Amino acid sequence: MADPRPRIFIAEDDDGILDLLVTRLRIAGYLTAQEKDGVAALEAIRRQPPSACILDVNMPRLDGFQVLKKLRADPLTAHVPVLILTARRAPDDIKTAIKLGATDYLSKPFSDEQLLARVARLLRKRAPPPPAPSREVLL
Image (cartoon, one colour):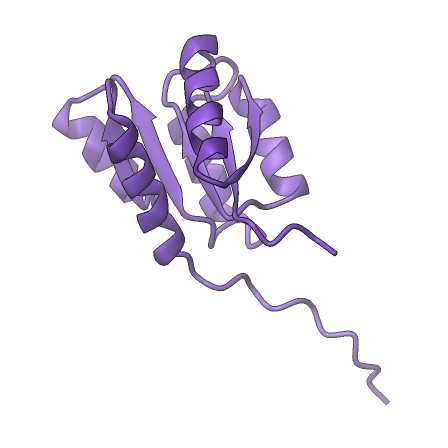
């Protein structure tokens, strides 16, 4: 039987922040998966779409905005809620994230309470996944 707990995917290249996120989310009862660069994150998310994603903006190979854009363009991942988590606070960055389809935006530094509240909100806003392709035989 599959584990019913929500699985949160984290794309973060800073080891300290990544460890903090994984620890806090696991203590709160979530399953986690993670990668440190945008290309690896995108591949992992497409292989097994999570309940929600946390994306850093500044990552190697693909930044968080590029990953978000590709997630939204793919029918398998378009429904996955995404929290952009970054040190960037410029209004243009927030507008870009929302325009590309981010569900929420949180600036670093953040408190445990802020993180857990935002993740809970992501899961409440989660859209149903797309229906599986029909396997009916047409005569």
